[in-house]
Amino acid sequence: MTFTGAGSSYSLCRSAAVSSSMYTDFNAHSLAAGDLMMNFPHYEKLLDNTILIAPSRSGNTSEVIRGIQRAKREYDVPCVAVTAAEESDISALADLELSFPWIYDESVCQTRTVTNLYMIQLFMIAVIGGQQRMLEEIQEAVHNEEGYMKKNREKLKQIAEEAKWEKVVVLGDSELEGISDEAAIAFKEIPRVPSNYHHILDVRHGPMVLVDDRTLVIMAVSPFEAQLQNDLIVDLQNRKALVCSVGALEREEIKSDFHIQVPEYDNYGVMGIPFIYVPQVIAYYKAVKRGVNPDQPPELDSWVEL
Image (cartoon, rainbow, N blue to C red):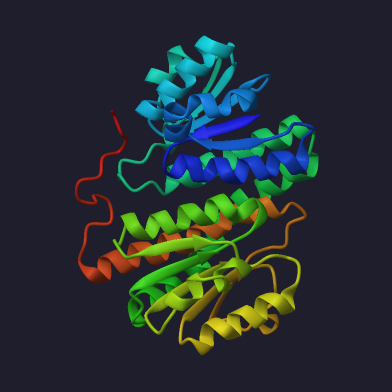
């Protein structure tokens, strides 16, 4: 399986590829649609005997459309499109289109769409892989979301409004690497602050030099190696960063400045559903505090047409 998308959708593809490799019998990859479109000959071996899975809010993004067109023309590659809009440009190309118009965001900055596309892809992977427990946990996460949001909203608002941070580092591994990358994009788009994503321990390999007292770090806590993660948190705090952790560990087990506890899931990817709420809400309240429109970033369209 080859997951392909542009922007936020590509970030979701990265998580989906990891989850697919874990829970199905397929080899899975992710490709940025623009990369596939421009450098098609470099990916010919990867495209041989694959199926394209293309998440897209609009279903009209040029890079996605052109990449699928060429893959189908030259390799007869089947395509499954997952969209938030009906009767889009991708409809005529896809062998199967799954459209969910009720998840479409009017805001240019996708939040509802992103969360739902992430959940839908995880649901597809669970079905393909016969992972019944994952299906149950996805349902649990969705049903628990409203109470979870109400419980943590004021704490997240406090992080946005009271701290002096001006830039963000998002850390996440494994199945959450893509959704963590999307979190960094949300900070660029919604409050318009500089932000970057890194794997958790990789932040020490160079990016740490930019961490200072104006940095907010959001960490998606892995269920493994708590001591290594706590050691990193201390290193970040020694550089005066504000650290917000999100994970299943109890508050007393984690050394972060703020901790958002989520249920412990057997399938780690399910944690991405409650995780993404944290950066989205902090980004929203930061935008409000800065006096910028959280829905309409300047010179950014809902989708790109080349």
